[in-house]
Length: 259
Ligand SMILES: C[S@@+](CC[C@H](N)C(=O)[O-])C[C@H]1O[C@@H](n2cnc3c(N)ncnc32)[C@H](O)[C@@H]1O
Image (cartoon, rainbow, N blue to C red; front, side):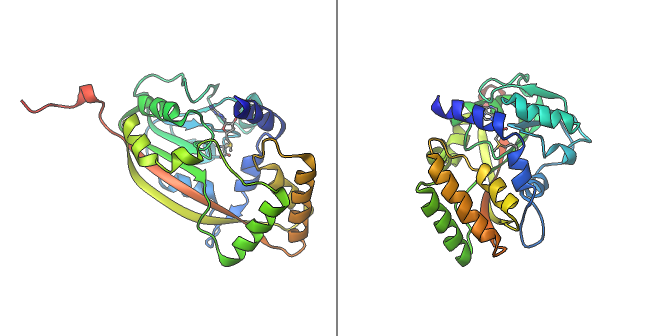
């Protein structure tokens, strides 16, 4: 409950912050994490963008039936202003979509906070047509370059706290959770992105994008100061990301049993 209250306030106050940071992250080829997610999305078919936020995935999906769902009115308002839609205010644990109503569920940077994860995965499986695909990204701790360890270590020292999410433990057992929900893990990759800190504004934006429930304001200030110092050196903050691809298996009553 505490996390849910925190998330609501965070996104009311920082709508579109994830897009502002991730949209400026790049790998060696200049590709951002949204592009990487979209590369794994099969062509054609109806898409549900779960925890869509400001709908940064919508431009890549606008030529097919699309529905964006999120709990935050502030995020949905930004998405609406950008022309994304249709959009619905809905919780991942009770999606207003008929069983088998979509062919693809995309979920960028959501599965680490959708609680309970087993319930969200069951809903994803319910709304996916058999053979349908889930493509999701979540933050991760690797891969990192040698310099990243120093940058991340300095940030954690300034924060005096780790960066954690409610579903960190559950995500370590994702293949089993997926199977329980009626999904099969087809792809599980990690990729490093970097967010280049070029200015104090970049530093502040990066600091504002981090979920840090309960962190004292003094620690926030220290983290901003540290990131601003890095921005004078034009350093990259590492953003390692995990991409998951899973397929909806046939529900038990649709399977044919040997006679
Ligand atoms: C880190 S942001 C990601 C937003 C967007 N997908 C992106 O990648 O830019 C997480 C989003 O999840 C939404 N969210 C949090 N809990 C949710 C829930 N239980 N059901 C649906 N959306 C939720 C938040 O409002 C927020 O927009």
